[in-house]
Image 1 (cartoon, rainbow, N blue to C red):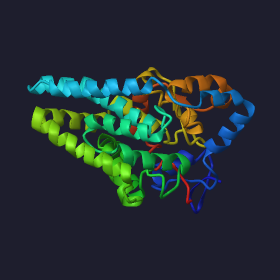
Image 2 (cartoon, rainbow, N blue to C red):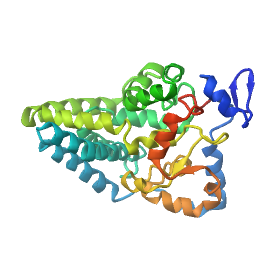
Image 3 (spheres, rainbow, N blue to C red):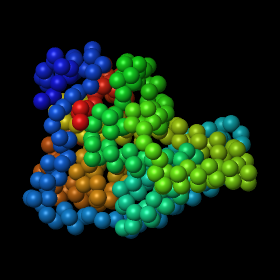
Image 4 (spheres, rainbow, N blue to C red):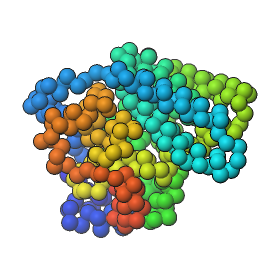
Length: 328
């Protein structure tokens, strides 16, 4: 049963009123929805299994974008407006592609051997300046298998975030700097001892930044770092951070986006499909959507990430507490 607080019984008619006045989250005691839907789809449409596996072109795509971003950084204009123009148009877009490439690699969708996916993710991480690929993999897989877990799903905002960042201005600031919350939140609510791959990722990144600065100067590093900060804030592609799990339709926990920007970011917008089958590469998620149309066509979805961001910021009904949480 869904509830807003211990003394509040869930009713779709007064859901939004409660969310606008109560900083509490949506507490649910049943299992996340993807487990059961996955079982039903595999039972009714066994040919879905043919989509499992890797995307043989993924490694070439991500390496191309990674080297392109590095190449641009080496020749970025040293005048203010030229720098800003390249940063906003090219840098932020390429960074978002790379971040979601690392998301694909976290599911081992480029190679059958996990270590090869890890090494590629570490390489793709280089132009992103901050060493996050391997830590993201560990926490992101927890997000899939423990979706909504109040401790282990670090994709969920904390109660402090929900209390502090309310209203238009609060949500605007949170979105503009959400990369900081995504980076720091796991360290505060679910700290883990770094594994071997995370240490390799960290050491490789430190060495790369030092060598890059020595040979090419700090302007390129500044371009790469600012690209990361701006790409993960109010950039149109960042709409996926909000669209994926913020509850805008009572009773639905995960949402898909079927707009044109999917072509840039490995179809990450097919998010219900991805959570149902994380072992299907993004390039094949549209095929899954067609095969299992009966399971997805009734679900609420989006066509514009820009509209998602706009609605999130101005809505009095939807805030950082518009997420489903589970006690365990």
